[in-house]
Amino acid sequence: QIVSWLSPLEPHKRHQDIRQKRLEGTGNWFLLQPAFQQWSDSESGDGNIGSVLSCSGIPGARKSVICSLVFDHLDTTFSLEERACVVCLYCDYRDDKNQTPVNMIGVLLKQVIATLNESGLLPKDTISALRKHLNKQKSVDLGEACRLLGETVKQLRKFYVCFDVLDECNEKDRGAFIQSLAKVSTECSRRSLIRKFFTGRPHIDWNNIMKRNPELGSLGHIHLDAQPEDIRIYVSHEIDIDENSDCMNHNIRSEILDRITSDGI
Image (cartoon, rainbow, N blue to C red; front, side, top):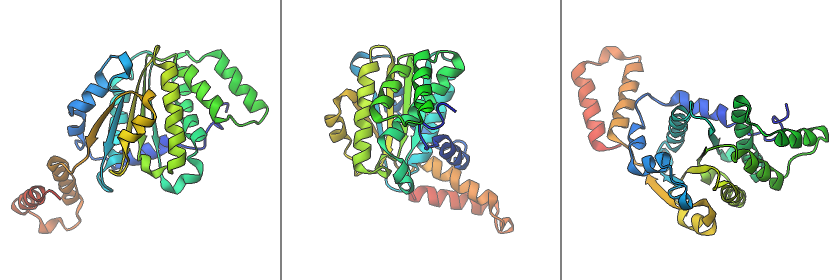
């Protein structure tokens, strides 16, 4: 009850929707990319080396699917590790009214609090501050949300943020959110290893974002393109669920898969 009013955003519901549509085996190529492995596995906190990884692609490039895969991969990898937390945020232009900087920082805070609460590491001061706001029926402002997020992240050894489709958040609000996240990163960098993963369309100027927010750290980038193996898995799945299976045989199936894959659709 104390944290439920921190933000109306519910990224885990969106995550589950995307996860259910993700076909097993697709996207594995992304996890093998050197840029991703360096970003996710590096233990170095010196200057936040490789702390930001951006991923761009045109509409339909499955950016959200990749984000869900990254989240699940990190969550599984660090699930048994003490003081590690992986959080997510999926933007949607249809929910622009709720995608304010304070709500976006607030939903990250909710996820960190849940992780710390499960492990008994949640600071009592954080609980007290939230209870005061609840008792007064007073919303947390952006400054207080950032302060609380910083205090809770400092309890962690590793903190991963997965932010999907940055371009579906209006420019003013995403700018304020990124600035706030950069501020939290600076405050916590000496005690916590912080990694940020963003997806978005190609028009997003990642270099300019980093230039305006140098506290985020250095930038790595991966461009999303259609992968033959992913296409093959998807088409094979569609063939399997096609009700007109009587029209299909092994030779036709192989020809369809080979032609579509070679065309690089």
